[in-house]
Image: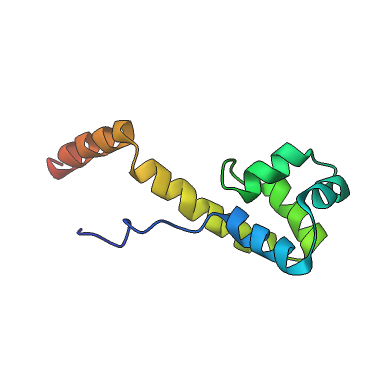
Length: 103
C-alpha cells in the first residue's frame, strides 16, 4: 500500500491548547482551577505528556470554546502514530498481512 504519510509527527492537542491559553494570557493553574482539574493533569496534557480523553476534551471546550471533536481528532492522529511505531504492533500487523495474503 506504500507510505501514506505516516512518518509525519501529528500535532498533540495539548500544543493547540497551550498556544490558546498563552494567547489569552491564562495561566495553567487558573485554567486547571476553573476546570476542576489538578495543575499537573492540565500541565501534562498541555506538554503532550498525557493523552486527552473525551471527558477532558469536553472540559477544555467548555473552558476555552475550542471544539472537543477537533481536539479528539488530533488525539486520534497521535494515538495512531504511536501505535504504528510500536514494535510489538508492527510485528503483529506483519503476521496478519502474511496470513491475509494467503486467503
